[in-house]
Image (cartoon, rainbow, N blue to C red; front, side, top):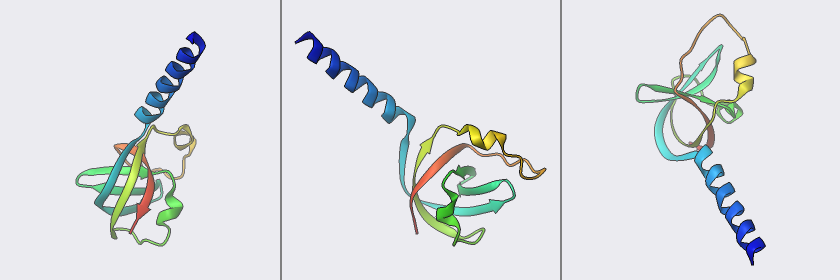
Length: 100
């Protein structure tokens, strides 16, 4: 009985940790931003760096889109990439789940 309770507690704790790392955002009207630092979606005054930018390859810069995405923790591989001498500020990193 104690083992079952322990396993259940660990399972619930791990689910709560996983869900706190991502925040799902649905159907926001955004604008595609592309420059030498990467691909972004702009919502109001905030830019969000897209980690799966291949989904936006067919969209031109400044194109309005409706996107759903998960906010995720910033990935280290972005910090190690120096592509150009431009700095581009962004609020957080997102993973696009759908775009139209």
